[in-house]
Amino acid sequence: MPTSTTFQSQGVALDAWHFPAVDDRLATPAGRPCVVMAHGFAGTKDCGLQSFGENLAAAGLDVLAFDYRGFGSSAGEPRQVISLSGQVEDYQAALRTAAQLPGVDPDRLVLWGVSMSGGLVLEVAAGRTDIAAVIALTPLVTSNPDMPAPAAPLTAPDQGLPANRAATTARLLTQGIRDKRAAAAGRTRVLLPAVGRPGEVALLNLPGTYDDYASIAGPTWRNEVNASIAIEAMRHRPNRFAKGLRVPILFQIADFDRCVSVGAAVKAAVQARAQIRHYPCDHFDVYPGKPWHESISEHQVRFLTGVLTPAAVPA
Image (cartoon, rainbow, N blue to C red):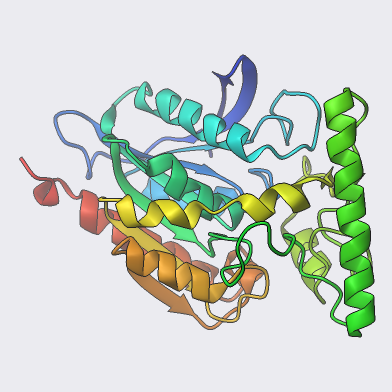
């Protein structure tokens, strides 16, 4: 079981779980490697991350899993507001914290991300010398790879008639503009459901998405998020960092993913010279209780032990 801890990011107390490595099989004289992980879009660490953390700790890695500011058990106001630049800062603060954990090698840190955070870790890793490996699980690396920003919103619109899709998207963007104006004026933010059923105004509303997210939802998760993230995500393109990365990277891609672009993920993985693993599943089929979770977790362990076993570490 993990132990609870807190750390500061831009003056905000973030809540985290520390999974200590069960042994020192991956240790060098400088210490053990440590994985830093956070959830994807609107997620909290109690939405399925514990199983990933425990499996990695059982393989000899320390793990630090945290909630972003304003989400889950972390402090921060306003609540339920995604700031992509803020989440990058939170990852950076988590890395500083991980480097100071007892017995951890500060120069062998691992970035782990899923969905939206699977793209964020590419940005966080850029230009750093203390990152030993990166794992990007079902990563969102661009909102729309075929259109220049601003492009389509983050949402997967209603799958009904084209008129319904257009109406749903228009209502979402209208709410996004209202939220941006509220933020600029210091008023209460406009929140929308993170996930909903087809036809509902939500950031994700594909058939089955609501039930899939609800199946992994932990006690601190709330189904609401700032409406303006639909606009901010249009300009978010962490794939631009892939080509410059020079560390071992594992991309785990769900070939039937309906929530992120599979083609964009493959292209980013090739640019990053990553190891690529494909799974015949959808976006949410990677979590505990789903058919592909054990294989995906096993492949993460195999990848990290392969690149972090002391005999493989250059002198």
